[in-house]
Image (cartoon, rainbow, N blue to C red; front, side, top):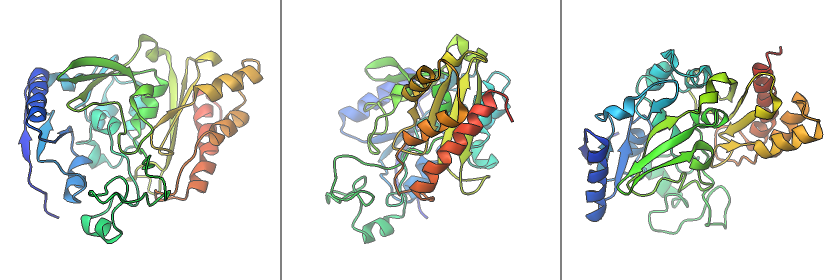
Length: 325
């Protein structure tokens, strides 16, 4: 399948990248940022929203930072898995992404900024044209949503990244840079409940690095993932959990691949601990998390099965951090 034409830019510094983005914006030119390209470039081949300009982050040294407290957007998942500096939970989650070959190119930034996915969107241009397009890629036709018809106010394409919920339960934040400066946002606030907007990045901005708090090193975590093929596929459901051992008030749980955003479940945890006098009942907690998610029918497995598996994945994740069989 032929790649559509585009101009590839290689800025050498963050400042140069921001200046280039500002120039293209002033000229009215659209563009994409690319890190490893394992998601963006296949989408271009399928003619899924290609842009005339692509800005690569591969020449920016600051994007390769890797320490216990900072992880650059260009750090590959393979590097993360092998690093002694990375948190064990992040190494565990990264090792479950795609295949070993893809992990050598796929990056932390790319996984966090992964485009949402849907049966009706992630198809060839000819296929999408044959069904008169969809709400996310309507090609100017005003096409209806194929998953939930008669509501064109919200795209329900599913976010299927693995790393986001794990960063969430470690209380991580991201550094965003762009022509208007830089800002820091908690990972739990980085995503927006809309399969088209996806996250809080504004035009010209990109995610430079992820930052972890000091107490992240004290946390033990576990990530449980449901997928069709163990060595390849995107998650159909994923549950991450962490805590500072023995301190139930530090418990964090987050999910992925069940809605348009990864989701942290602090409300369910607070209610559970209040009702159980500060203790954790694994079965009851798992049911509470299961009830809080609402998958739709736009991935490989049916939503009812994915939702039922949330209870199982949550039990496994909680038993993993509590060292129970």
